[in-house]
Amino acid sequence: MADKKEVDIDALIGDEAVVTRALRKGAREAMKRHIAAGVPMISWEDGKVVEIPPEKLAEMLLEEL
Image 1 (tube, rainbow, N blue to C red):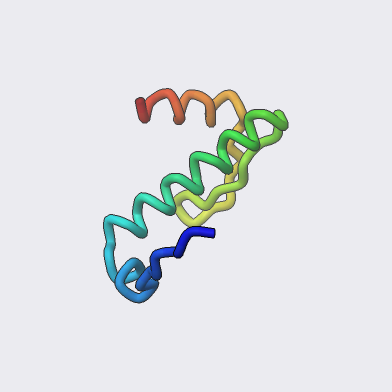
Image 2 (image 1 turned 60 degrees about the vertical axis):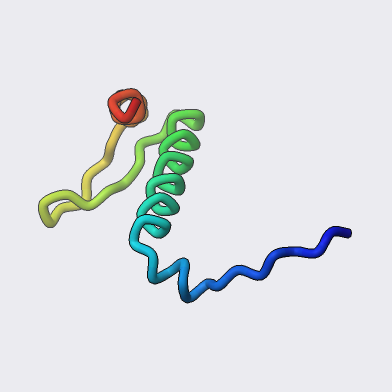
């Protein structure tokens, strides 16, 4: 097995761009799963809990492109 490169987790967490990319990637993956399952995603907007229907999630993903 090849030697694995050690990763400095503290440095990664301190890098705002790395953290932002990871969070966005996770959110996109969650949106895709909700779309595939046909269920709304729950979110927090303006101090309220809201449901985002799968159709709206698909639109949001397309807008990112």
